[in-house]
Length: 175
Image (cartoon, rainbow, N blue to C red; front, side):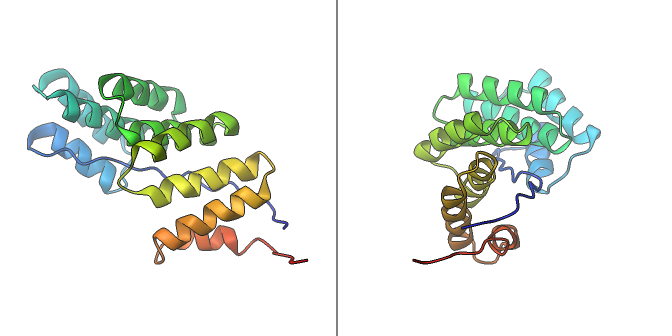
């Protein structure tokens, strides 16, 4: 199996915050794919001023981390994912997104470890975790694992083009 690595932007997940207010706006910004500074500020204001239960607080940290990761501010993103997983150690999205941040920093082994932990806990969009795991495994030079991960992402969400684009770069040779 051979492929030329073209590390595209990592795919990040987000979590939905139920309720209203700024935390919900933060969640919507993350779900909508935004990465603007105003959205990050909305999340920060929600964390500083709103009375959130620990689950919504953890999810708001994940959402702000996702926005920061889209800005390629991996250090701040990881700090938010760290805080989220301290608040709710069973929040898989905190782990897979921290893994995605590591992948963005080309810290592939750490990325795989974090993504695996998040997948074991369960996440809303596992296809994104498998895609990022594929990027990490490809970065580590394990093309067989990368191919399997991209294939898993494509199978979980057949209408998503990103894993198909990555798979198209591979040539599979059978003995």
